[in-house]
Length: 370
Image (tube, rainbow, N blue to C red; front, side, top):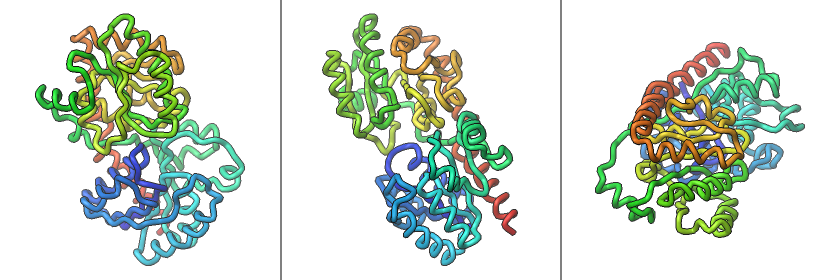
């Protein structure tokens, strides 16, 4: 099959990582894969893997942007010229482009829904869900059925997958010491951390308030924030106001998170409202890190409370304190959960398993077109 993966950009984040990982896994399976987007820092990974990338002018969040309508015909041309069998869109903007391009070319059309969507006029008048819709978690699956009335037989539940081998490597203590120095982490401190863009819903403020309470019981703890975003300055400001400057480290986004994860003890994940699944959580678990997370969206599909981590109610910083301290102090519990976390990713969230299931969706769509 010839497959065209469409996404708005290839910057660091869940959708960019998903697109690049899926493209590489499909190519390894012998599929002919092309990616089209506005580009981004993850683009070189495609080049290294020998995957073609076509630049589109789609860097917009509005499906009504003039860019969208211009690129519909650009994508239709790509589909016809290259004999594309399936268009697979990852974002709302590329869903609209892919929908019309598929109608004009009769290529199969698949979308992946990575999270939750607001009801609006655009979604009502132009759903653009695709011949088949991939939901990345049970929560997203039910959201599509209950809130947008997508028929269940059109939806395939396929969890995100990662290349666990990148994170399974156990770093030697000397390597960890060097990495602690690099990131400004004290050697005598425990480290809790998160990898997430600074957006209003990711709960960075909740984590800071939790740290304030944790330090009352365990003073030698540092919190590491990994990521960029418009809300970063607010987190820096709150850090100062809470008097936590000596215990909080801000690290820019990392293309490869394996190094920074290796020096964390507990991975924190605290979205306040909705979360599709959480690729960052999978990476942390593959690295052997127990997780303390808020129980929202698809997080419970990964984190099993009391097995490979702990789940608490969202937006309540005080509930994060006890499980975090417990993991930092109880070595036996820590090791048990760390092992369970790694095994869960290997067994249920592998990139190859995800690619197999996505490939099966493509085949169903192309067979129906025939």
